[in-house]
Image 1 (cartoon, rainbow, N blue to C red):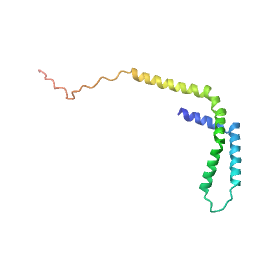
Image 2: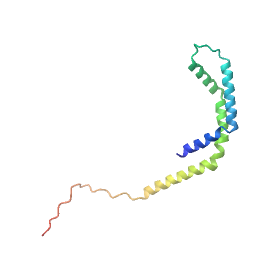
Image 3: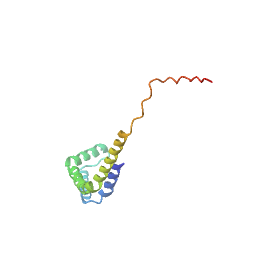
Image 4: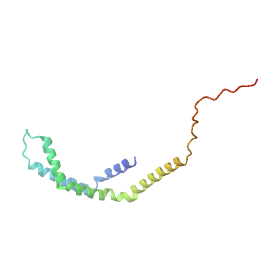
Length: 124
């Protein structure tokens, strides 16, 4: 649909923006530093290590700030010139279709008596 198109358009553009490249570099460095501090042994629970790393990245706040900058560079420039006109057009089309449905007269109600008509008597 319309919003899937917006998402595809933004995702196709995101990795070319400096905000994305900067965030990716920050996360890569953070992960490397975090893993360097871990002493590896085969008995480690990889899921616990992964979840601990995920929590550390989230708590650092770098994702939230980085994503805000990505949105500023990718979505904001398209908002008024590309997305808003398409959304407004879709809303107008929807409302026009709703209004058209309201203006179409409803079919007459069926008679409540469902008995077949009485046969006519021909005077032949």
